Image (cartoon, rainbow, N blue to C red):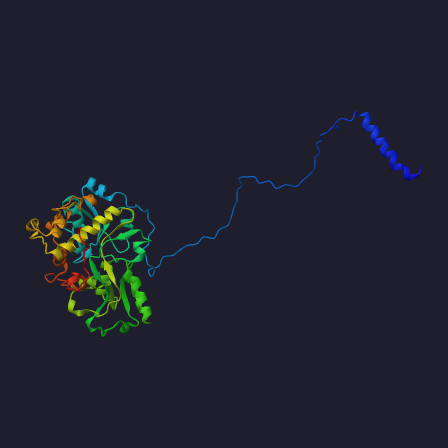
Length: 394
């Protein structure tokens, strides 16, 4: 057949075939075709993996500050209710710093400037300044003791710093004693300035701001020295008294206490006329209980304001009849300032009647009639050139 007729004949054959099928819908045949494909499948399986790891051992040395100690943090909780239920305030105190905190081994009772502020909290909450339980703490044990909840409040010549106020989880209250770090040396040592101490051995207590300040100050003046670090105040003092160190450093108030109370001949030792740091000291509580922190703060402010207003332990009952609205508020004669704290409105009256105002507490332990005889200095009321200043009681 001629190839040009091939296509027309093929078309005619296709039409005939469709006609034979009746012209209906074409039958759809479904056929399953298996096609091999590659897919990614994610499955959870349990496997045992053995790895080799490097063990890192951290060694603690005496030159390293030991302030931040790992401890289970108790948080603030409802400290006021806990104190009211148990009937006493648990206080972290110093047992070995004359004038500020000492423990009588015969009576097992604490006394001192710092101790009285713990007693003031007990007077305000429970109406009884003696309703306290003291726990002796050292420079390194004091913070874990408070963090863990072993004590409600720490009143132990502790410096207010940003790291303690934040990363250690504390709240500081008004400063009760403005201090500064000093240096004590032998009178016949020939040392008159810090620069004269090149190559000297200096006794210092571990776990304190004093230890870090010492290194920072001597680095700044480019003077090399050898630190002799001891775990607590007694061992530091004993080492200096035994002649193991050329000098001893701590807060100036502490040096004055050591000089008078721990050295055989106080005149053989002199505190240099230099201040190495700012050391604002005061009570502190745990983060997480704003109400208890407010209570401690306003108890301290109560002693400040009472001195400013002329309210003393001797005249406080008479002052209950004062016509001065500020004194009426302070002593709870009018108003309900205590109620907002969860305390009786006369909480400040209880503090002053049992312990006295700030000036009386200071003079009793640190003033001119004591062995320390520390001048008030920055610890004077603001109107006398000091830094003691209470916010208004209104």
